[in-house]
Length: 151
Image (cartoon, rainbow, N blue to C red; front, top):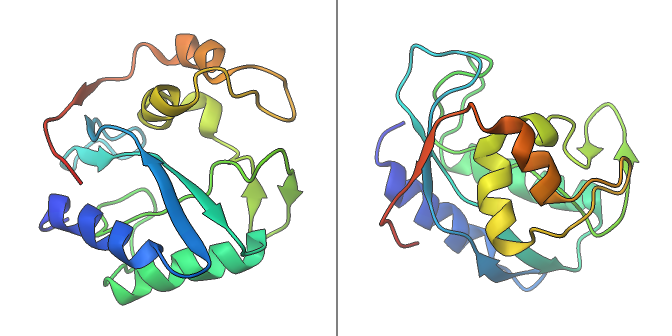
């Protein structure tokens, strides 16, 4: 919602700390909403980071960024200022009520797989063994378009 490009830039700026370093960024994609269709398209990108945080600490950090940027969780799958997901954490598998890594819906979301494929097409899912490239082939019906936005 709001100034979408600026929200992405601000989230990336806030993400970087002594404990979190952004190594690479994908292109920015404009993507069709998947679950709640009656809303504007989203902007999405994937970043590769290096961190000293453990997974739950990283989750707490990303949720703080979302809160500080005005994210309110009013409508599930609805419009929001920013949404930061942890897709992978190395080869780790985490399954708690608060955090699941790899992200549980990753393989069904072209808006995640397309930018992730730019950075790591041969990255293997630590549970099912499929590569990002292989998962991407199953999501071709979902609409998205690459943008000229630089963050």
